[in-house]
Image 1 (cartoon, rainbow, N blue to C red):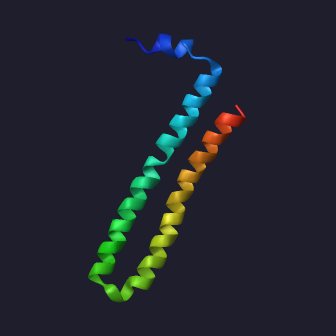
Image 2: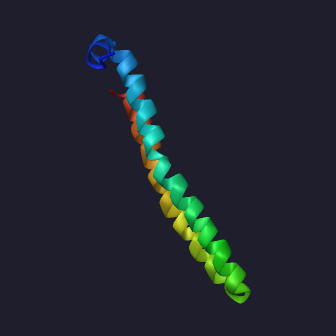
Image 3: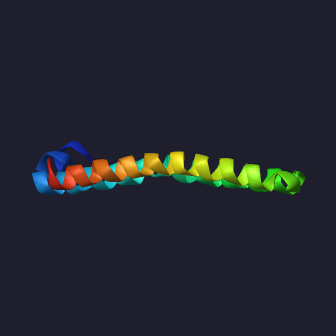
Length: 85
């Protein structure tokens, strides 16, 4: 089964929905994995050095905010694809 005839038969509205879905799906994979790795690293660091839990937690929350911003950017791109294009 070839993909090209199927893609050519898509209407503009369907292509818009497909593009928005792919944008958000691919855009949140990286931040999701990054936040998981970050949380695991922070829990391991707190387990090794409980006295530094405050500093580790502060840095972890800041890094999670930066990673989550990338996911929010992909959400904005998806919304733009849905309602503007």
